[in-house]
Image 1: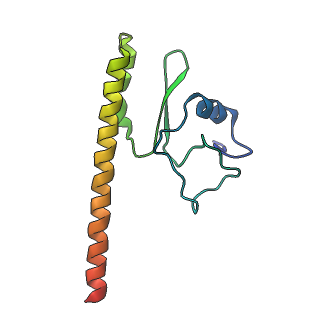
Image 2: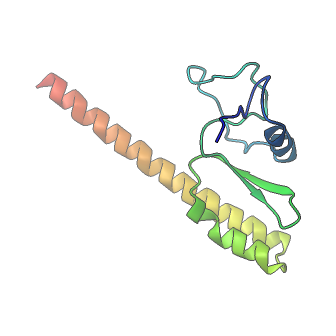
Length: 125
């Protein structure tokens, strides 16, 4: 399997299409020290494991940042497969995914803070 670019001047047409079809979530941001493509564009993929959800007709419908786990999307995919999903149901599922993601981020942040405190204690000892 050959490596391809997902951002920059040499990005694969598939990713150009996906990014134009699904703008990034509002929380998307870049770490300026970890960007490897040039130029940086507003719809660029931020990091590995960014996900695009494609409907049965091949249309990109949602885009998720790396912290969203594939298992977080199971209920949304099942609803979409049923074919009887309302906009309200989709919004509820997206809010649920967002809540899970925020809880996960808060847990990681708390663990990092705890680790930093422990390192400070070790350095002061």
